[in-house]
Length: 258
Image (cartoon, rainbow, N blue to C red; front, side, top):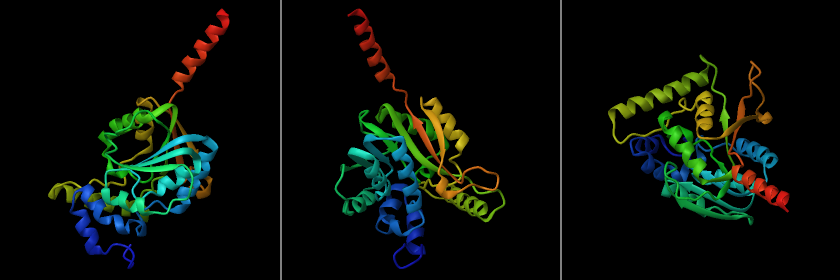
Protein backbone atom coordinates (compact mmCIF):
# COMPACT_ATOMS: atom_id res chain seq x y z
CA UNK A 1 0.00 0.00 0.00
CA UNK A 2 2.85 2.34 0.79
CA UNK A 3 4.89 1.56 -2.33
CA UNK A 4 5.71 4.44 -4.71
CA UNK A 5 2.67 3.49 -6.82
CA UNK A 6 0.24 3.42 -3.91
CA UNK A 7 -0.97 6.16 -1.56
CA UNK A 8 1.26 7.42 1.21
CA UNK A 9 0.24 7.29 4.84
CA UNK A 10 -0.39 11.04 4.72
CA UNK A 11 -2.62 10.68 1.66
CA UNK A 12 -4.63 7.94 3.34
CA UNK A 13 -5.06 10.11 6.42
CA UNK A 14 -6.35 13.02 4.34
CA UNK A 15 -8.74 10.69 2.51
CA UNK A 16 -10.01 9.13 5.74
CA UNK A 17 -10.81 12.58 7.17
CA UNK A 18 -12.82 13.52 4.09
CA UNK A 19 -16.36 12.56 3.17
CA UNK A 20 -16.76 9.10 1.60
CA UNK A 21 -17.23 10.58 -1.87
CA UNK A 22 -14.33 13.03 -1.60
CA UNK A 23 -12.11 10.36 -0.06
CA UNK A 24 -12.64 8.00 -3.00
CA UNK A 25 -12.11 10.83 -5.48
CA UNK A 26 -8.71 11.48 -3.88
CA UNK A 27 -7.82 7.78 -3.73
CA UNK A 28 -8.91 7.01 -7.31
CA UNK A 29 -5.59 7.61 -9.17
CA UNK A 30 -3.80 5.11 -6.90
CA UNK A 31 -6.70 2.82 -5.97
CA UNK A 32 -5.56 -0.04 -8.20
CA UNK A 33 -2.28 -0.15 -6.26
CA UNK A 34 -3.94 -0.75 -2.89
CA UNK A 35 -5.27 -3.90 -1.18
CA UNK A 36 -8.75 -2.37 -1.45
CA UNK A 37 -9.00 -3.43 -5.08
CA UNK A 38 -10.55 -6.87 -5.54
CA UNK A 39 -7.73 -9.37 -6.29
CA UNK A 40 -7.56 -10.77 -9.84
CA UNK A 41 -7.96 -14.32 -8.48
CA UNK A 42 -11.39 -13.43 -7.04
CA UNK A 43 -12.45 -11.70 -10.26
CA UNK A 44 -11.41 -14.70 -12.34
CA UNK A 45 -13.16 -17.19 -10.05
CA UNK A 46 -16.40 -15.18 -10.12
CA UNK A 47 -16.19 -14.86 -13.90
CA UNK A 48 -15.83 -18.64 -14.26
CA UNK A 49 -18.79 -19.27 -11.95
CA UNK A 50 -21.00 -16.75 -13.75
CA UNK A 51 -20.28 -18.36 -17.12
CA UNK A 52 -21.92 -21.49 -15.70
CA UNK A 53 -24.91 -19.50 -14.41
CA UNK A 54 -25.46 -17.41 -17.60
CA UNK A 55 -25.64 -16.47 -20.36
CA UNK A 56 -26.64 -12.83 -19.85
CA UNK A 57 -27.38 -9.99 -22.25
CA UNK A 58 -26.85 -6.90 -20.09
CA UNK A 59 -24.93 -6.42 -16.86
CA UNK A 60 -24.46 -3.75 -14.19
CA UNK A 61 -21.43 -3.39 -11.91
CA UNK A 62 -22.76 -1.81 -8.70
CA UNK A 63 -20.23 0.53 -7.04
CA UNK A 64 -17.84 -0.21 -9.89
CA UNK A 65 -14.89 1.88 -8.70
CA UNK A 66 -12.16 1.81 -11.33
CA UNK A 67 -13.92 -0.92 -13.31
CA UNK A 68 -12.51 -4.26 -12.18
CA UNK A 69 -15.97 -5.84 -12.05
CA UNK A 70 -16.85 -4.47 -15.48
CA UNK A 71 -14.02 -6.63 -16.79
CA UNK A 72 -15.82 -9.66 -15.36
CA UNK A 73 -19.13 -8.62 -16.92
CA UNK A 74 -17.49 -8.27 -20.32
CA UNK A 75 -16.73 -11.98 -20.23
CA UNK A 76 -20.30 -13.08 -19.45
CA UNK A 77 -22.56 -10.46 -21.07
CA UNK A 78 -23.30 -10.37 -24.79
CA UNK A 79 -24.76 -6.94 -25.47
CA UNK A 80 -23.96 -4.18 -22.98
CA UNK A 81 -22.27 -3.52 -19.65
CA UNK A 82 -22.69 -0.54 -17.32
CA UNK A 83 -20.58 0.58 -14.39
CA UNK A 84 -22.17 2.82 -11.75
CA UNK A 85 -20.39 4.62 -8.92
CA UNK A 86 -20.88 7.81 -6.94
CA UNK A 87 -17.20 8.81 -7.19
CA UNK A 88 -16.40 10.93 -10.25
CA UNK A 89 -12.69 10.27 -9.66
CA UNK A 90 -13.14 6.51 -9.78
CA UNK A 91 -15.20 6.75 -12.96
CA UNK A 92 -12.56 8.96 -14.60
CA UNK A 93 -9.95 6.25 -14.02
CA UNK A 94 -12.32 3.56 -15.32
CA UNK A 95 -12.99 5.51 -18.53
CA UNK A 96 -9.27 5.76 -19.22
CA UNK A 97 -8.80 2.00 -19.27
CA UNK A 98 -8.26 0.26 -22.58
CA UNK A 99 -11.31 -2.02 -22.91
CA UNK A 100 -11.23 -4.89 -25.44
CA UNK A 101 -13.86 -5.04 -28.11
CA UNK A 102 -16.99 -6.77 -26.89
CA UNK A 103 -20.27 -5.59 -25.37
CA UNK A 104 -20.86 -1.82 -25.21
CA UNK A 105 -19.48 -0.30 -21.99
CA UNK A 106 -20.95 2.81 -20.39
CA UNK A 107 -20.34 4.64 -17.11
CA UNK A 108 -22.92 6.36 -14.90
CA UNK A 109 -22.35 8.47 -11.82
CA UNK A 110 -25.06 7.71 -9.28
CA UNK A 111 -25.65 6.55 -5.71
CA UNK A 112 -26.39 2.83 -5.34
CA UNK A 113 -29.22 3.78 -2.97
CA UNK A 114 -31.02 5.68 -5.76
CA UNK A 115 -30.26 3.95 -9.05
CA UNK A 116 -31.40 5.84 -12.17
CA UNK A 117 -32.27 2.79 -14.26
CA UNK A 118 -35.36 0.98 -15.44
CA UNK A 119 -35.54 -2.85 -15.10
CA UNK A 120 -33.05 -3.33 -17.94
CA UNK A 121 -30.38 -5.70 -16.61
CA UNK A 122 -30.09 -9.48 -16.50
CA UNK A 123 -27.14 -9.47 -14.09
CA UNK A 124 -25.92 -7.15 -11.32
CA UNK A 125 -22.55 -7.77 -9.66
CA UNK A 126 -20.65 -6.01 -6.91
CA UNK A 127 -17.13 -6.47 -5.58
CA UNK A 128 -15.92 -5.32 -2.18
CA UNK A 129 -18.34 -2.41 -1.89
CA UNK A 130 -20.71 -3.46 0.90
CA UNK A 131 -18.56 -2.04 3.68
CA UNK A 132 -19.75 1.37 2.51
CA UNK A 133 -23.29 0.61 3.68
CA UNK A 134 -24.57 0.31 7.21
CA UNK A 135 -26.65 -2.78 8.08
CA UNK A 136 -29.83 -0.70 8.25
CA UNK A 137 -29.27 0.33 4.61
CA UNK A 138 -29.28 -3.21 3.21
CA UNK A 139 -33.08 -3.46 2.67
CA UNK A 140 -33.09 -0.27 0.60
CA UNK A 141 -29.95 -1.28 -1.29
CA UNK A 142 -31.32 -4.69 -2.23
CA UNK A 143 -34.64 -3.13 -3.20
CA UNK A 144 -32.74 -0.86 -5.59
CA UNK A 145 -30.97 -3.85 -7.13
CA UNK A 146 -34.29 -5.62 -7.59
CA UNK A 147 -35.75 -2.53 -9.27
CA UNK A 148 -33.17 -2.57 -12.09
CA UNK A 149 -33.32 -6.32 -12.81
CA UNK A 150 -35.59 -7.97 -15.35
CA UNK A 151 -37.74 -10.92 -14.24
CA UNK A 152 -35.42 -13.88 -13.69
CA UNK A 153 -32.47 -11.51 -13.25
CA UNK A 154 -29.49 -12.37 -11.09
CA UNK A 155 -27.59 -10.44 -8.39
CA UNK A 156 -24.19 -12.00 -7.65
CA UNK A 157 -21.25 -11.10 -5.43
CA UNK A 158 -18.40 -12.93 -3.68
CA UNK A 159 -18.38 -13.19 0.09
CA UNK A 160 -15.24 -14.15 2.02
CA UNK A 161 -15.70 -16.20 5.18
CA UNK A 162 -14.90 -14.16 8.30
CA UNK A 163 -11.56 -14.87 9.97
CA UNK A 164 -11.54 -17.23 12.92
CA UNK A 165 -12.06 -15.39 16.25
CA UNK A 166 -8.70 -14.75 17.87
CA UNK A 167 -6.73 -15.00 14.62
CA UNK A 168 -4.52 -12.21 13.31
CA UNK A 169 -7.05 -11.41 10.59
CA UNK A 170 -9.83 -11.20 13.16
CA UNK A 171 -7.93 -8.68 15.29
CA UNK A 172 -6.89 -6.65 12.24
CA UNK A 173 -10.48 -6.25 11.04
CA UNK A 174 -11.74 -5.56 14.55
CA UNK A 175 -9.02 -2.94 14.98
CA UNK A 176 -9.86 -1.27 11.66
CA UNK A 177 -13.57 -1.12 12.44
CA UNK A 178 -12.87 0.22 15.93
CA UNK A 179 -10.68 3.01 14.54
CA UNK A 180 -13.40 3.91 12.02
CA UNK A 181 -16.07 4.04 14.72
CA UNK A 182 -13.92 6.30 16.90
CA UNK A 183 -13.15 8.49 13.89
CA UNK A 184 -16.86 8.81 13.06
CA UNK A 185 -17.74 9.60 16.67
CA UNK A 186 -15.25 12.47 16.71
CA UNK A 187 -15.22 13.79 13.15
CA UNK A 188 -17.71 14.90 10.52
CA UNK A 189 -18.59 14.09 7.81
CA UNK A 190 -18.69 10.35 8.45
CA UNK A 191 -16.55 7.94 6.45
CA UNK A 192 -18.48 4.67 6.28
CA UNK A 193 -16.18 1.71 5.71
CA UNK A 194 -16.67 -1.25 8.02
CA UNK A 195 -15.37 -4.73 7.26
CA UNK A 196 -17.32 -6.68 9.88
CA UNK A 197 -20.86 -5.39 9.30
CA UNK A 198 -21.78 -7.49 6.25
CA UNK A 199 -22.76 -10.87 7.73
CA UNK A 200 -23.92 -13.85 5.69
CA UNK A 201 -27.01 -14.59 7.77
CA UNK A 202 -28.18 -10.98 7.61
CA UNK A 203 -27.48 -10.84 3.87
CA UNK A 204 -29.51 -14.00 3.16
CA UNK A 205 -32.45 -12.75 5.21
CA UNK A 206 -32.50 -9.29 3.62
CA UNK A 207 -32.21 -10.72 0.10
CA UNK A 208 -35.09 -13.10 0.76
CA UNK A 209 -37.18 -10.22 2.14
CA UNK A 210 -36.44 -8.29 -1.07
CA UNK A 211 -37.92 -11.14 -3.11
CA UNK A 212 -34.78 -12.98 -4.17
CA UNK A 213 -34.16 -16.71 -4.09
CA UNK A 214 -30.66 -17.17 -2.70
CA UNK A 215 -28.08 -19.81 -3.59
CA UNK A 216 -24.56 -20.07 -2.18
CA UNK A 217 -21.92 -21.46 -4.52
CA UNK A 218 -18.48 -22.31 -3.11
CA UNK A 219 -15.60 -20.95 -5.16
CA UNK A 220 -13.32 -24.02 -5.13
CA UNK A 221 -10.28 -22.02 -6.22
CA UNK A 222 -9.89 -20.81 -2.62
CA UNK A 223 -10.31 -24.11 -0.81
CA UNK A 224 -11.99 -24.73 2.51
CA UNK A 225 -11.44 -23.77 6.11
CA UNK A 226 -10.51 -26.35 8.76
CA UNK A 227 -14.19 -26.82 9.62
CA UNK A 228 -14.95 -27.73 5.98
CA UNK A 229 -16.79 -24.53 5.07
CA UNK A 230 -15.74 -22.65 1.90
CA UNK A 231 -13.26 -19.82 2.28
CA UNK A 232 -15.07 -17.83 -0.40
CA UNK A 233 -18.66 -18.18 -1.61
CA UNK A 234 -20.49 -16.67 -4.53
CA UNK A 235 -23.88 -15.40 -3.43
CA UNK A 236 -26.30 -15.85 -6.35
CA UNK A 237 -29.65 -14.16 -5.76
CA UNK A 238 -32.30 -14.63 -8.45
CA UNK A 239 -35.64 -13.02 -9.09
CA UNK A 240 -38.57 -15.24 -10.08
CA UNK A 241 -39.46 -15.38 -13.77
CA UNK A 242 -43.01 -14.26 -13.07
CA UNK A 243 -43.46 -12.33 -16.27
CA UNK A 244 -42.23 -15.26 -18.34
CA UNK A 245 -44.49 -17.69 -16.50
CA UNK A 246 -47.55 -15.48 -17.08
CA UNK A 247 -46.67 -15.12 -20.74
CA UNK A 248 -46.30 -18.87 -21.19
CA UNK A 249 -49.54 -19.52 -19.33
CA UNK A 250 -51.45 -17.15 -21.60
CA UNK A 251 -49.98 -18.76 -24.70
CA UNK A 252 -51.03 -22.16 -23.44
CA UNK A 253 -54.57 -20.96 -22.75
CA UNK A 254 -54.82 -19.52 -26.27
CA UNK A 255 -53.62 -22.79 -27.75
CA UNK A 256 -56.20 -24.71 -25.73
CA UNK A 257 -58.99 -22.52 -27.06
CA UNK A 258 -57.85 -23.10 -30.62
